[in-house]
Amino acid sequence: MAKSTMADAYRALASIATRLHGSDGNVDDTFELVVAAAAELVGTEVSWLSLTDDAGTLLRPAVLHSFRDSSFTDFAIPVTEGLGGRALREKRTVVVEDYPSYTDPANPDSVWEALHAEGVISVMCAPMILRDKLVGALYVATRTPATFGSADIALLDALASQATVAIENRRLYRGLETQNALLEQSLTVHRRLTQASADGVGIAGIAAILGDLLGAAISVDSTLPGVEVVSIGVADGAGATSYPIRAGAEVVGSLTVFGVGSLTPSQRQAVEHGVTVLALESVKLRSQWEIEDRMSADLLGDILDHDQLSTPTIARRAARFDVDISEDFRVLVIGAREGTDATPLAASVLRTHSLTRLLYTARAGNLVVALPGSRVAAVNRIVTAVREGLRSDGVEAVFGIGSLGSPRDSYVAAIACFRLALAGRYRSQTLDAVAVSYDELGPLRFLLDAADIEQTERMVLVRLSPLIDHDATHSVQLLPTLRAFILSDGHYERTAAALFIGTTTLKYRLGKTLEKFGIDARDPDVRFELRLAFELLSLIETRITPS
Image: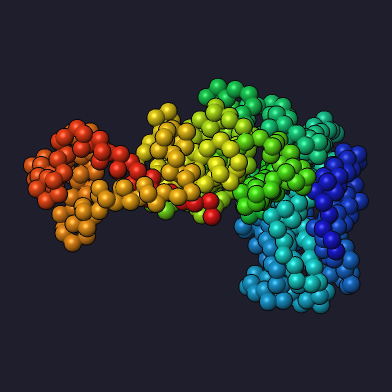
């Protein structure tokens, strides 16, 4: 069977919630609806619902969907056995993708044989837990091999939760008439939360409704990258209780309720259904982001790899991100030292700060970001946000900021600037970060753009090759010593500290440079000539061509 869409799931959940709202205590029809919806929405051939007896010790099938043998309802097993017992122990939905090969001492042979006779191959069991006790279990199964994803698990959890609500409703209706008001409140909780999710109000909107239903200050903390903590109400330093938000076995966040010692029944139901709806919302949000990230990466890859950008297809794709490809672009290359792949963390920082009108993709362990237009403020904001975000994780970010022009040209310049920053040869004068900006290189940036720098290379080598040849055959390295001395403007103490040597050793090496090669680094004119040579050497070492 084909799996239904998320919209179908919301409609089914809302329909069941409406059925619960109109229930008079007879929940058999609701159970039938839940079981049928489980098979249809998850896309399985078989589904069934088992309930515990009044003593809460035995679990017995109550509703079957598409079973070949209806005698399966005759089975009754202890609540600690079978998939339901395992789901109770683990407090989560259990997935078995190869049931014919499944072995568990707590799984009765009779149950295994009955399901095997039904042709069950893959099965999923969601526990129905009420006040830490198993009251039932909802199952879906296929007769062909299947794989259940996190969205399937979250959906079955939601349906099991609604079946649990149905059981609770039956208990309430069997109780005192004075509990009718409580029942109305609990149904309102489920109707409002489910409808809010279907209306697409997002995590913040669901949290606002949940805080109103609980009558307490709450916070929702998501594990999804880029989702900030949502706080509703003022905590006032009161005690707090946290509840995990689970999408199947995965914890995708937590709900914290402040200032409520012991939850009332209606509050408990609000929490139980609230975390279920928040889990579904988290799964939906993550799926949307994954699609957007892939689209952004594919688009930027096409822009960087092709000369012709003015095609209707690329323009339409760019418009989705509010990007006009007719504008000039500025490209940033963001990475880290010591081979650290900073791409996932840097991308999550961009999402956290809700930076828009940009494209990004991963290349060679670095994050490539393209911004249309000059947008100097956006460049500064990206550098600051990523620098602080990575630094909080003990990673020092490195930035290369390209020219303003075509995406490919800006990318080539950004790569060259990134290599300069990585080598520590240059550093931006306007950005408080390990960064090199193409615009700040001044006249030296001609080397990044020039098609032929052979003459420049010859000039540099004529001045420095004697030192290079010497260092190749001697343990005392004169070229790094001279380079550090020149770049520190002839300051002995700073140079010695940078090289981790004493000033006496430094002066000895400079003396050898004068003695062997006639280079007097104390002469201002010589220092100027050497500084230019070293600046050019730094750019030559990191320069790449568009190919």
